[in-house]
Each structure stands twice: as C-alpha cells, then as structure tokens.
Image 1 (cartoon, rainbow, N blue to C red):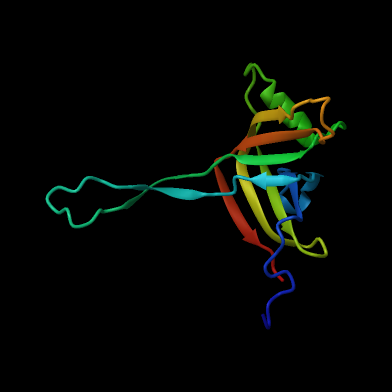
Image 2 (tube, rainbow, N blue to C red):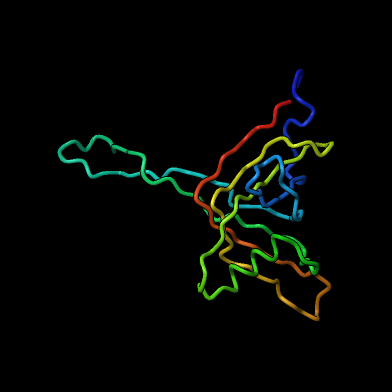
Length: 160
C-alpha cells in the first residue's frame, strides 16, 4: 500500500506492560513483558425498551459502558517485580486495608520498539493471580495469569 507507514498493519506480538507512576505516563517503567494480553474491549451495552403500539421495528438506546477485565499471561517470573508485589498484596489481602489501585499501560511496539499505541487502564487492581498447572508428565513452561479490573481505558496513538 503506497504511503502506508512501515508498521501498517502493526504486528500484535510486540508490546509492553507497565504500572504508571503518579508522575505520569512518560515516567513509567516497563515491569514485565507478557506473552499475551486480552480484555481490551471497551463497549457500550444496548438497551431494547419495549415499544407499545408500534411493532415495526425495535428501538435501541445506549446503556451502561463496560469492559472485560484485562488479562495478562506470561511465563512464571521467579524474581520480584513491582507488578508481582502489588498483585500479591491485593490478591492475598484479607481486606483489612484498602486496595491500592494503579494505572496500567499496555503499549503496542513497532519494529524498532517505538510506541505505536498505548492503552491506559485507570483505577486498576488485580482480581486474580493464577499459576499454571504443575505437571511432571509434560515439558511445558510454567505460566501465570494476572487478571485486572479497571474503571476505564483510554487509547492514545503515538505521533509519527
């Protein structure tokens, strides 16, 4: 395609995940790179109110905005990281203290690792931290899955 940027369409295999510090997105430190990220699906539910009298078509209205949880998968990491410490504090909590939320940034990277698109998940907190199955009959890599709830997501395209 003539005139298309070199990363068009961008590959889905190069991305980074980071906790965003209070000082802002530009100061984020990539905590860990994940094998798979899913759940980037903000949407608006649709309401179909019952119509009285006219049955020729269905009226639809926007309902509540929502999204799935962000799901991060990777090979199990044995060294400490800010993300792992936070996940352990929240998922192992007895709720004796308040849950600390953070912003999480997922950045799609181009061929030279330049940021192409960043999704920022606000008020995020871990809801599940699963370690894959231990099985002596396979040679699979041990994986972990971190599921994160959040209130809203914003998408920012990086300038070329």
